[in-house]
Length: 327
Image 1: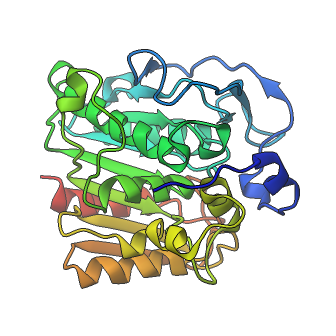
Image 2: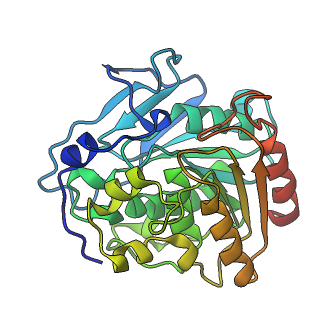
């Protein structure tokens, strides 16, 4: 779907974005945390790179963040960052997870919703892959489809690695957070639509997951509960009603959507819990297996923040759901 290009800086200059989604000011370079390995997902430059002039940068998520709590902006080289269960002293369970961090489609919080989450699920036996994806406001030829291109390619890469990394290609889960939850739902809840031409043998792999999880997700692009910052980054300052409807994922659920786990805090002021409720209703209407947890507190982007400030026990709830559906 064609979407008019827009000046990302102009939009963001006039928009108050939640502090939880705002990047730290000073760019730095951080080493990869112990146990993780990283590799690009594309064989060369990403699709639609002609004319892209942004420079990739990593910053701290907050001024008081540690060195492995970084965020990336202006991603030029999409990657997967892998963590094996053995790296955290755990036994593999034969399953894999593709993790998609959030960041309002203006950055990717690879530490808070990537490294930390991967360690938690690697301890449970999952081999974890964290997606660093391109952002729609950086001038890519595909515009708002650029993140989807990366997500589809990443899921195919995970499928392609099943034999060498010794996990079951039929036991792959996709988990996304905030705007990454929108991308995860875009990847898993709609009927797959090819977003880029095949490049190599990896692109013969399916775009299919056995299980999906959307944590405090951006779902709607229309109506009173939209996260305005994510919509502006994805669709521009003045999207048409048709565009907003097309990217509202509660309206796009397909019959082949895998079982879905949803979690949201009721006091989320950035992405209202009505986003998860809308997706819950849509999944139930299609007869998709779904479990939804609404927590009293936690705000937005709670990740693994300890209790009582946030519901840090949600991974146990997910693992119970996965035990029933990721056999």
